[in-house]
Image 1 (tube, rainbow, N blue to C red):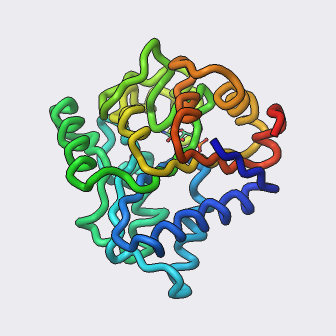
Image 2: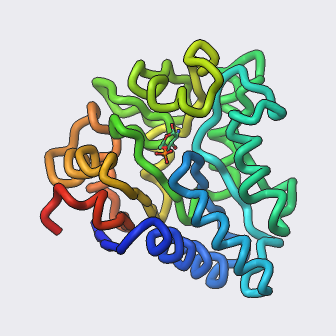
Length: 243
Ligand code: GLP
């Protein structure tokens, strides 16, 4: 595990964007695993900026997103497909055929999980997976549990996640109760993993996940075992850890 301590949100976003661009430059047809949430917005803005300046080309890049809510249509501004369209897909030259995100509207969510896992397999796995971290240690939507789930699956969101995500919805009753997420195994098979975290609100969970034993009740803790895992976090998010 490598920890890169940065000054602030902007510094985190630029450094993480540098890592993603290096990946795209070294392997123009790479498979990028992408994340949603408020944390990666600055990183996506930076990639879009470099694309605009002609420094980056997404023509051959393939993407797979971590997760999606069950039951939110693509036109709902809280769906993750909507988020990705808004922050990245519509702003760079990604081929629509090359972007993948679980379909939370599939009437058979279990079949959708199998379909999604096969897409990742058929792409030959993920070259670089970007992650944020939930306040309870979730990655994607892998919530604290007694076990680590291996593959893409349907998950019941915990009260703490519903609570954390309600800020994006008109009312807490509108936050979906389920999501489809890549499994911990799917994520751990990525060749390279980069997590970004910022702000003092994330400090307790960053400490819990990366300075203690591995525990499925803190899903992100398993990343300690990944052979190429980098945490890029600002001083505030690392303030409770000895780095
Ligand atoms: C969401 C997403 C995660 C994300 C996390 C943190 O629920 N499913 O992929 O990492 O919450 O979000 P934020 O970056 O807004 O703190």
